[in-house]
Image (cartoon, rainbow, N blue to C red):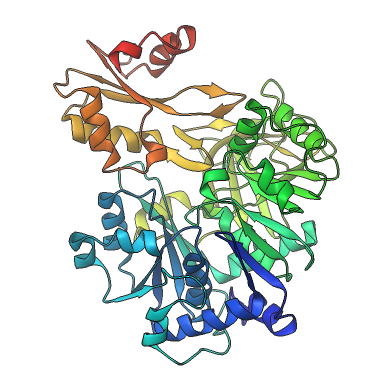
Length: 515
């Protein structure tokens, strides 16, 4: 395999340089313009093999990702607005990038402490197109074409929440992402006239699908501004988007504020929801708003490269019983899925167990975590599988149905969150073992937030929240922290988290004064 994640973009730039490639921050850039800038940025990266991209929703962010791939490097997306200093520093220490690309928000994060652990090469792409003096001064040269690489070479590393309080880097190879993009290309059939939304943070792997599905077909990427992300109705209609991609929570918010009206989005022909379970009533509301659109539920952990199991709402399979969810569906081509019991023995159709994934989309593993990689990617009957930790059941049609988590991992706004990680940090900042974190509230089957609990702690809830904001991304910080005289326990001595949630469900304001 001779491939580069940026190669399809390069071919489109050669074939149709005047076509729109990217619309971001209110400005539009053609394939030719974006390719020229990318080639020069790639030259500035030199021999770097791991490139951190500390940028988001700016021209510099997208040039940075393209240039990293173009130069033959793996990119590591780092959010400049959602990662606190401690977590960003921890990731930089783990990955040790050879270069760092920043936009204006990323540049503002470069405190003396972070500069001390950052690589010597920091490429500043904070300006707008044709206003990048830093790039002009660095090099007049240009890498004319992407550097071809093999299937086992790295494409990117995405850091996700870890149960120990330390982020873990999922390593994705070129062969894995190439297989996924080809499966989605065949499924969606994008064309150069398509206008594809980009809603995801670059540190969320769905962004890879949004960007490179478009650029591989000559279509254009429309980056939804952060200010319109939760209510993007006008953005969809103003720009005549044809392909939509987001977490279900965005659609749920739109329905809550009455902007998901029947017939609202006539231009959409394909809508993909990923990152969380998709409730059937929400899928039906979106279908009514986008009557010409196929509505698809794409399931997949980062470890199986963006998405690996998929179902179309309303036409393929019945809803998941009792939960009323759109099923996860069937594996994509080249992917295998199965259900196993606690001993990793395969279970028959209809039995509930853990979902496991095999095939060409599997990640290489976790960056510099060989033991964790062996644990989560075991060999079963001579084949390598990934243990998702998701409870599932396969129905008589062959479709897989998501039934919840085996552990305490949740999806919050599409982001994977380990409640154990929040508890690890809460223990640290409170200097107490008597802590708990629960997912609450849950509306339409979607987690809306987290509530933390402590006992026997001298610091106030506000002080603890302030400390957590320095350690965790904002979406992981609890909505509030409740201090109790004593945390409830089960008969086995474990903290009874169900007992913590019950009063919240029965009287949401019960703990307000304690928060």
